[in-house]
Image (cartoon, rainbow, N blue to C red; front, side, top):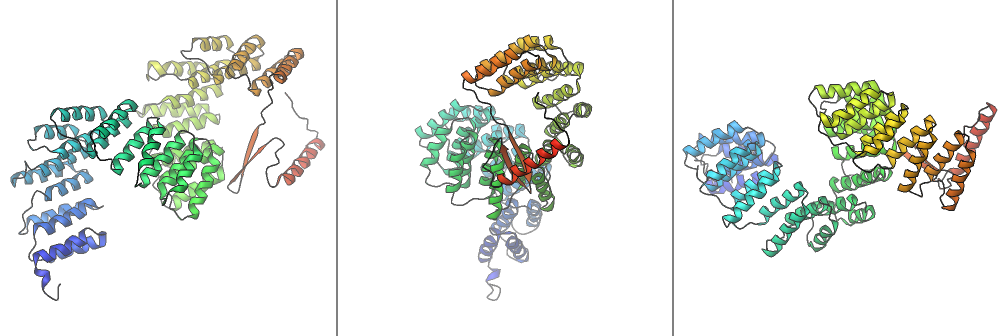
Length: 597
């Protein structure tokens, strides 16, 4: 084109620039360079390059190009300004957007529907929903895009009720919705967890013959899954002739949420192509169902397929390590985060603090907590719970007070941690005060876990009558954890009568729980009531209850090995038993006697 002289033809050059502008960044830069060198620049050429930068990662460049355009012989049109407003929204530069709108106004584009819709979008993206709504209400050139822009702005800002109210106004004005409108409305139902309304919109889509596009079907599936209704999501998935990664991943998440991990894995294996998102979804499903070992195995498989992990992968892996107590693996994940330069965001930092605490290295947990750049209420809660579980009660309470002083609101989990700290340290008065403040000061509803902490605290301190009265005064039915805390305290302090009452309530909840029978028999033995202990064992036999074997696990070279009593499933079980026999003989020679209490 240069050699033939065609480059000076404005139309031909604009096609070349457009070709570059819709490609990757190096070609976009090349197109921008051609544009600047041209003598005959037209508005189309300027617009496509401005659009390329506004869509990409360098929106500031589109503003610089606009300034050059104003000094050229090309006059901006109604297509120029929507790209500029998009760039301002990306930059979160509201003031600059208003200056650009001022120039659009002076050039006579203030009542153009494209310009107004883009401005509404910019207001919404900048967090100025009120300004967006004022502009929308005052506009005389509203079209369907205007309504969709405003509805979806409310949805993306977490204001579903306002979006639904706007849809009702849209119906009054006889504006027919399309699939983009319905995506916003179905998303409202997801945010509100309103399954009934979601089903109504599903019927509305069918009755009005609105096109079931892939994004709309995905949104409906997501709504059903998050509102706890799996079957309609399955039915929609089955009707899809074209499925995206989002479609497959939504079903994986849905099956995992309902504990159907075999079905989740089947869908995962059927996927024609898998990026990191479905791998993360299935791993998270395993962690959610307390199957951390499978989550780690899946990660190793993911590595073998050369799919690159992201921050979500690392956070899920850390949660799996926390479940298993797999410190070596957790340390490797931490090293991987640092090595690959993953952004240590709040979620990842919190997961690290939690992992080190739950895997037994509280000092490392404290160090990570101090080093991470961002901390929110969840991070503080993880640290408080970690300190409490390691017996650092004073430090846990101190962190709770610091959290409160910097203006972070504690939640129900924070109070579980701080009440546990009081329990470990026997701080009865402090525990009572915090338990009262939950409702009086922080307006939080007490859950079963908080009551079990208080019963445990009072029981360990020997305040058994107060503990039993608290159980009786609970606004909900006590569960096994609450009765178990009371029973444990009765056993420690030798209160047989109250212990029997607690044990009977435990048996009412689960007649076949072998642990209750064993603990009750042990309590009788410790109180020299052997006849009663024998009766419990006889009852256990009559009920056909067998003692559930305990399970132990150990991490060796990043692999977690699990064992139960008389286990013969491990490939090296013969060598393990030889080692155990050797240890037992050593203990006998040292004069060690087993404690059977």
